[in-house]
Image (cartoon, rainbow, N blue to C red; front, side, top):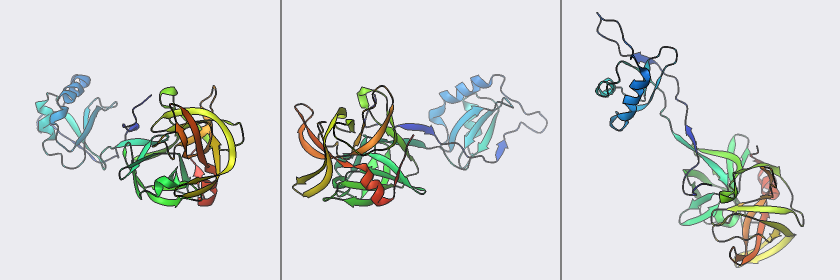
Length: 299
């Protein structure tokens, strides 16, 4: 469906409105506009690599049919560059902010701290603050976190052992929380509509950055699992396989023929692998939401 190492982009941020300066012809001549604005834009596209560093884009104004070049900072050399590109007359628009690439935070995709990799579980909010929920043994490994598109933020809460949940506060303005969970090669993303408490025989699927989308069922609830680092209580047992790096990833209800799911938990640990099969345990998502006063990002 997509490569893990690439950010999911939402596109350029909107250009803020700014004062426009018109490059006019000599005083004894009337200002001109290109006879073919589309051709002028094509000329600028061809010359994009040589544009002044302050140029952030260009377009044809629908009302005036003029070619507008957006500039963040100094407009020195912009008119000369446009003339060399044979774009004709242009209007320079000064903008308050340069466009930036935005990227999505999506359940099941990779997150990193230092040399460690885990998987994102779910996105959540508390007031205006944004958070990522993952495994506690992941957030115990490091405070600062990044994703496929860059910085996410810093650890806000971590509980392991006893529990296995971690919370990362999203501080990057470029990282956009979503209600989505990645199904990798199994299909398009699914949308989380809310949390649910696991029950025996519940059909579930897991998303993780190592082995992708895997499905099975709940085979036990409220189980105690003892790892070398200590025991974790009230975990969900499943017959869904997982491997290293899938930790923290999303466990959701099986979508069936639809594209909506309920959030069940985050990958903790287990035995076996996705070649021979195995048992995997999950931290219930309802506990971390309740303890930390968080609300899931839903769609």
